[in-house]
Image (tube, rainbow, N blue to C red):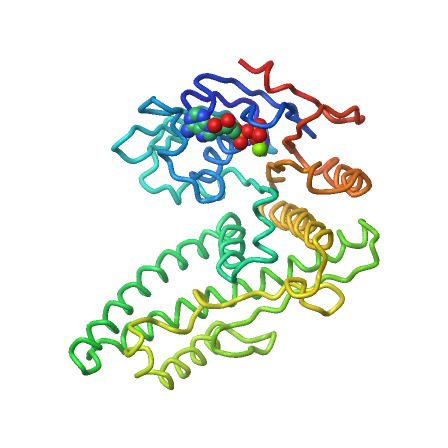
Length: 363
Ligand SMILES: Nc1ncnc2c1ncn2[C@@H]1O[C@H](COP(=O)(O)OP(=O)(O)O)[C@@H](O)[C@H]1O
Ligand SMILES: [Mg+2]
């Protein structure tokens, strides 16, 4: 997938701006605060229906304005164009049109425009809380697997219902009769979600190992999926996972009522990222963490490409400030021929094959 053009109106720092990147590697440069990340965020909106780093729609309105509009044109590998329009007005929900047709649900956009980000803030995927790693996993899988996204949305609804029942049971001092039904529903969905995640990390690891080889650091990466209800054997079926979860939920029953919430399930799981068999979060240096994050994203790009046949657009924010020159060179080499990427930096760079664009020249 390639972005051909995006037009921003009243988006963040840009009252009006048009950006038309080339195929291949693009370097968007300008001083701090010149609105480079804002442009990546606009592209992200058109691909994934939301801004970067959990920002809210209304925060993206240019100060003192009451609507923003993003119009973009993408083209896929087969040459078919996709037009995405995102419009937002203060005090109403944002609206998304794909090829002039309005989407009923934002989730309908996910997967249409495969897109991967890399930014300094995302270091928290490696060294932050389990929630960050779950979000990474869910976002990645949702782009490639419609069924996963549906299961996940359904799981969240069922989880809410079940938590409400647990709270109700706590208030009444006795377990609600329908709790069992919701436990079963939740466990069924959990089986499907967890087994998709296991398969995802298995396949992602193949690419990650390859990328580490290509970077040539002599380090060996690894993942361990940690379900909240205890370790799983690597080849456990959906049904077995559901059964184990249901059994474990049965065992802790009254504790959940006391705590008024569901204590086990994919919403509580974690993924341990490792290098040379040790947990990165606990032992790795900042440099190793950065390298792992970029390698993880490069691996994800290959995974998405393999899965969908469509190379995702790669948005890399402040890449140069995050990696030393040697690693940047390596990363650029890996990005070459891997579809379209848009990198932001404070300075222009004279690197062969990199198309440089000054933010100040965009109008
Ligand atoms: N909603 C907004 N309206 C107007 N300006 C904004 C808005 N949000 C952020 N900005 C401005 O955008 C600038 C940051 O843009 P950013 O894209 O992060 O710059 P950089 O080029 O450093 O990546 C800041 O000066 C900030 O004040
Ligand atoms: Mg920035």
